[in-house]
Length: 442
Length: 105
Image (cartoon, rainbow over all chains, first blue to last red; front, side):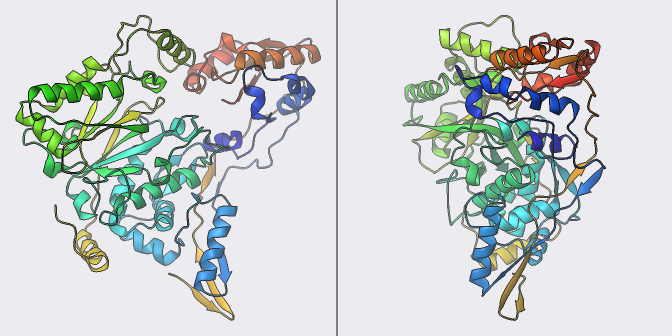
């Protein structure tokens, strides 16, 4: 972990350190190993010398695997990638030059273009490196514009991806896509939009490619650089889905417009989340039911989750994402509710009452420098303003269940990027139709 | 899939998924001697820092009676706060010639 962090800061991947077992850092532990090893601390400050002393760019070599036949070579490649910690544990497709070149046709950009450094390791995310992850994850060329925009957003300082990568929390990016690109690439906004779908395969591969970049380029290997205690299933393929723009009530703005993009623009918005809660049941057939449904939803937000507080006092922080199916949204719109009114209601009713737990948690966050505020008003809102709550229409068609994706405490706020569509888009989509069949109807 | 038929099988040549890394900074030169020097501590505020740093400080003070060790409580605490120019400025201002950090930070 420490060597990764040094690499991320531009040093050689080595450091003057002595590693103690993790159990030593737990309450009530035996600290005698410190005295026993104090010479090693002194050595680190006086005699330790780095192996690499020259400035350089370290380019990893290509890999060759041989097998009796294609299946055997593929098995050996997968085993090699697992041995070298270049995998998420699931089988990968081989990132051959042919496959990487195929994926690059979805970018219209040079393969050495750099998106940024992925921390903590500080690996350089070139388009070629990203296409390598995309190849391993099973992406198609038409997925690349969304993948690149999502990674650009993840590298935005607002997302503070280094915290997401190394935290003990269960942080993972939620990527919401707006615009025609979502339907073009078969990205799910409907039934099961947070899960697997052969009808809408794009989200899983894009999310997996993001994870492989975070693992391989960023070095966030669980237990060594990523200290996430549980990780969470969303760390495999992430949460990459589209807003159900066709299901939005007429006078509700889609997320891309709320984020400052024009109507119809292709965009991604990323918020680092830590998990989700199904909220059931609920609809908005009349005003009483609408209020009951929202009150229940606010109850799912109003929980003792310490992660809220890292940015509850941050003007750009978001406490999470409300996912509401189109029929539920339409019910609210029919009763005169706007997204803003829903946010206002949820903000008011999700405030946390004063409690010893709340005071203790706020104090702990303050000590770690994650927020500073002298005076807290109780009940305490989860965000500075109601507008900080993200409301997205997505999910299956009927009313019923809604979903609350809570923020990971440690990110600063959501980040958005426009999706750049390459000039060969229609050709890519035609090839996709040939391979996968007609796009599903709206 | 790129594959080259070899005498008795198949060869797969693939890209390395790790990506390049740049080494653009050198590690600071080590001190020849710690006695008489000022050593700062930086903490991210978790992982029992109040216990571990106290023990490290005590052990160092016994070995290096002329070293001055400034406790982490006299510097900013927290991952973001210690990863800042202002933290470095404060270390320099306090005369620190060496720093101990990474208490699981």
